[in-house]
Amino acid sequence: MKCLHLILFVSFLSVSLGHEESVHTIQLTSENFSKEIKESNFFVMFFAPWCGHCKRLAPTWEQLAEMLNTKEGSRVKIGKVDCTEQDSVCSAHEVTGYPTLKFFKLGETESTKFRGTRDLPTLTTFINEQLGETDEKEVEDEKPELPEAVQGLQELTDETFSKFVANGKHFVKFYAPWCGHCQKLAPTWNDLAKALEHDKSVSISKLDCTQYRPICQDFEVKGYPSLLWIEDGKKVEKYSGGRSLEDLKAYVDKMVGKEAKVVEKTPEETKEDTQVALQLTSDTFDHAIEKGVTFVKFFAPWCGHCKRLAPTWEELAVKFVGNSNVKIAKVDCTVAENKELCSAQEVDGFPTLHLYKAGAKLEEYNGSRTLEALHQFVAKHDKGHDEL
Image (cartoon, rainbow, N blue to C red; front, side, top):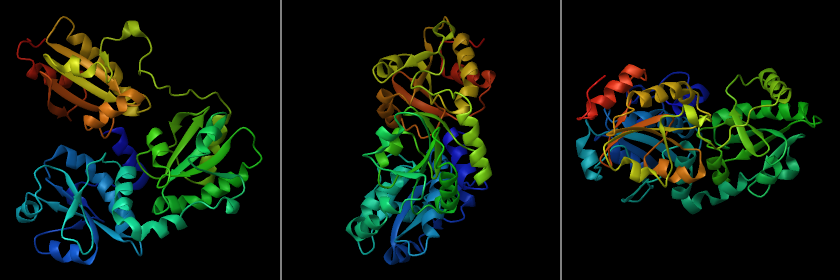
């Protein structure tokens, strides 16, 4: 389970939801599809149960449905179609791959295909763009009114964010106004700000990701609310504890009382003499994978699952030392120059493990992460390599 998905599960859902267990997403079939899209704007995922990318998207899609299908007065509904059972619907809408995401506007016969990154902020921004002028007034109404700000709570914008967090310690809530979990947290967050109003060692603030999406992307916000501890302009860690006032205050006390280790945008291991896995960048990636078998780990230094996998990944690289046909490599997706590469490789969670052969991606590895299992997987694809 990737870090992103674990975050979404812990933060927003009480159970792990697969396609067959969806609670809030509207199930569309040949019997109700036409009727449903004539009555509302619809954002629809066309999927197949066996599709790996569909499985990874499922919890995010269900969260999107929980937010919008249960919201009173919502102007859009979230649905999905199982193309293995509803072939006629998928054929009619020219679905040729999975998942395919299409937005159907009320009263229009043509749909708009979503082509962006499949994370919650990007999906919600796409929805807002599709709703267009009809929602402009609503969006304007949601803009922060600074004179009414809660005592001690800083409402940040694209103009104030960078300068504000550049120095010192900051506890920032990244949120969306329509998010039910954000709304539930709001009074407690306000109380936290009031309690620490005169504490010069830390600031409590918030940023609306529906209005300032680029900032949220830079800080790798994948779900709402995300509570990040930032020091001197850099993310230290994401808070994942309880959301009571006592829990939040205890966390602040802990972070203020010690020098927190800042996560730099650098490779996960710092001792170069212990590294065997090849560190790739956007400049070296294509050349590295063009020959032989290349097994690549796409990771983020702050990701707990990535940290646990790191020593095993180095051991795996050692296993193939001397085999010129196999390379064990890694890409840090938090480094600015690599973000476009990771997006192009459809990395939507960490760690993501892709195997390439002769320049082409063969498959994504989703099996056990033991050294033995990883070694067997690579050896299977290495025709010229005798298993150790």
